[in-house]
Image (cartoon, rainbow, N blue to C red; front, side, top):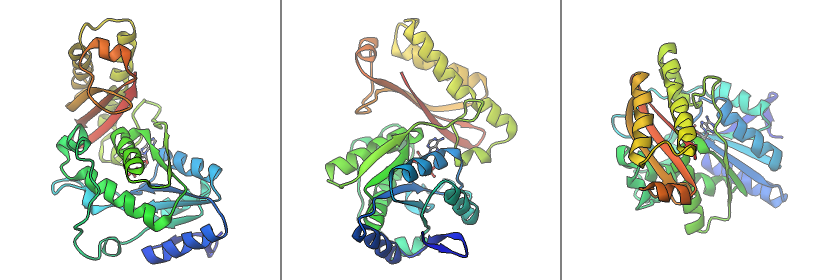
Length: 290
Ligand code: AMP
């Protein structure tokens, strides 16, 4: 594999990355891509391992993409630790790291975006204007630069995963998208690079998100709630009791992310709970399939 001084190689230039991928394709190697923003944890590593198992070449992209952050969001304080991330990826079986600079990804102010005009304004998109067009556009760029056969995303960001699958299908990208299960702390808290913004106390309290969803699922299976609103209210109260502030809770059809409004709809569709909430200043998202 491509290594410098026994270490996994880090490619910074988009041109060099494309040249590497083309060379691998000419050798009939299969390429897996794991797009990340770095500050890697076991959730990311599970994706790298999945790719390494199923492809000859695994590219991990590490790029804190400015176009998916709102003006008042955490772009500048987002944790960055490339060397440590690279060594974690190497241990997990990655072949190469693609860590471009923003000036090389966006040599001029971008004018061309990929958008999902319906879902970009719903759920997380309602509170993070422009976020999903930033995500879809950078993922489209990463696909073009790395030329993968397979790309791996976590179900943790369920709306994002859905939008990427839609983009690939609607725009005919010849790429297979695999969604991987959410990796959680022992407490049940979904792993996230943003968890490190929280104090130990806040982290403990934030484990109420998963606990509340799990309990709601159990009670829902026992037909305890007589409306969807009651189910949502149950989760909200549990999170608030633990000190969290709910931004939204939605019960949606898992396959098209449209909201489910009645218990009959809930019973007759594959459903998922989507949540965003704050513990202290940290915004967390999570979900649970019903
Ligand atoms: P990020 O670095 O936050 O952009 O995440 C990169 C990829 O890792 C995305 O596909 C995420 O959905 C995925 N991911 C993040 N956290 C987890 C987790 N706890 N379990 C599984 N996948 C995750």
